[in-house]
Image 1 (tube, rainbow, N blue to C red):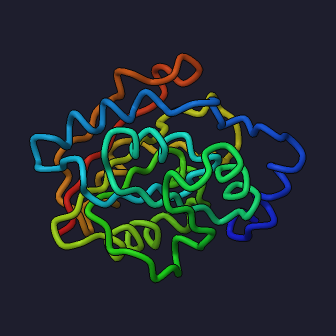
Image 2 (spheres, one colour; image 1 turned 30 degrees about the horizontal axis):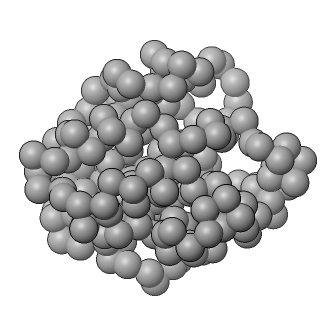
Length: 196
């Protein structure tokens, strides 16, 4: 179901502004960049935003000086990003699991991992490792609580996330988020991992 772009396109068609869209970048952009700065991530580095939706996070990262690719599976998401922001970043309609774009210095992942069917989580981690340069960073904002709703998004306990990530990454930070959007406050945590 969620592994086909038509599923996501229907949501964009039916809702116009899907429930996950905050009409702006997540406050977690700043929080994750602060965690990554001491690890050497600097403006000019190449970043990809998988599941970029309408591109708010990608454009915020571009404004902070990064070379950004906004990637989404759903054609309507990329169309919406281009309508809102033009060519400020490189937009790509592609499947995260099969694209041959990259490699990048870092991944900024907010709501993409949690949108995947839980059965695809290990494959998603592999895809992240495959899209990064050696030593690249995976910065992720994830849900440990989705208010009991069926997914997507799908919640994942922090310990389970650590175990999944450690297959390909050194986990450098795993803790509750402190700057979540008010609609998500107390339900998100952050992962920062370095590809081995």
